[in-house]
Image (cartoon, rainbow, N blue to C red; front, side):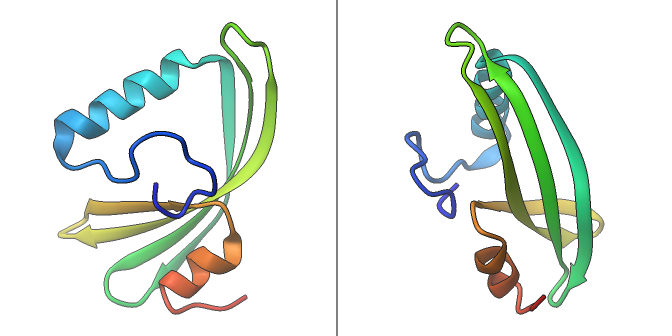
Length: 100
């Protein structure tokens, strides 16, 4: 999460237990949440660039969110071993050595 501007929680999650807890907390924070996969691009060094459009309504607050997030996945033997999330498309593309 170190690439996400203003992320208030931990910046780094290691191992299945920490990642699972992040996902549980994330899911509980939404009244409803949706996403659309907008783009997937192969990148050097067994990496993949992913662009998502996400929107939803916060649980309790009912605040609405409509944003794009960008991910860089590092793969090993077909499994994600590292996932980095970014607020900016350019940052994520630069992180994997790609350009628009």
